[in-house]
View (cartoon, rainbow, N blue to C red):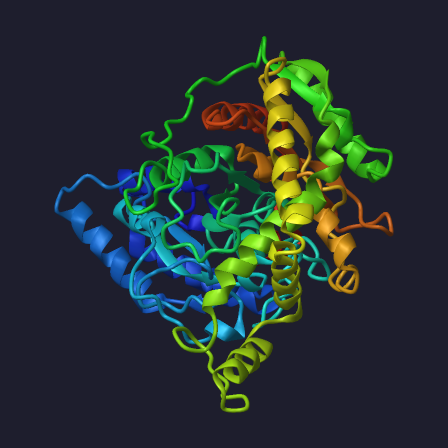
Length: 501
């Protein structure tokens, strides 16, 4: 087995490090070599921290040389999304309004990664303030999909997904508000996991929708997701929304899924679902049955209201959270007409992109005194109904499955002029976020592009569990993954770069 990280998954790399097969410094050098080779085409990274990463790697190597037991992620390069705080490192959130901002502290989840021996190598590209489904809304360039660079890697955690899919790093963190990790994972043919809301501290994550945002990892195998989720989860006294539970321990059971009841909501398989996506999911259902699971029809009738509900709740929270960017305390300042209000208006007009401005305006509108009850308060009621529907469904079944997204990755520019069509990319993921449930996206198969020819495009399957059933969701995904091997396929670009398939 080669000693370069991009031919191992993260758990394999950590095991190799513990055996003495490789050094942390060599792993980091390999990561930067891979980034240099591929990132000019993909635009996955916004900021690279080579010297800082090498310094951390050498510290890990010194500790091992001194006989100190390595952490569970020792020697593993990892990427962070640009809305995450790593002390002294640029965290611009894909926005001109925070260009040059360097946080004075590190997020809890970043501290936990480093304490476990992981080595952050840089910050990834993203839709501005995590608002987008395609990676096209960054103020610092478009991110591209390694499977077909004409296509989006999804969003908003576009750069993190592309970096893992291309083998630049074995692990990356993103943030998932309405599907911003699960949808990119589906488009890029990798695994992405949104934990139950509260399982991972949000301290140090720049807020978009505070009741929805969840730090969420990407990897190329579910086993690696289990490992990193164990590291970053657990109570944090600096975040009052964390669940009063210890770090998540994986369910070690392998083998079949005999007796597991899998819910199939008819609302997740509508007539409008792309036929090739339906075909892939039908094959996945047969695989679940072969593994011993029982398929059960369930009903989630308010699913059709999830997107409008999400875009009321999320924009309302965004309007409140982004009010702090006014040109005084952070980032950009534009004088305007010289008055205080003029400075506010000029700074926001210059600093925020069109999508962020659109969502702030929507959020301000639904929170205004004349419309609060008609829009925001009603959306909260529908959100509660969605959660109650999931609760009832989970009285009948152990897990629910469906497509992660209604289509394969679409072409860059294809939906950028139609915000509604773009928002519908999250139609399968937003209900899970509104209910605060754990959701895992893993590759379920592949389809041809619209011309019926290569390159093949991955299709993601979402596995949803009851609140706090994170280990159950991950175990089921790991067993399905092992039985199918879809996660072993690599994008042509990444395979060519390493001289193999």
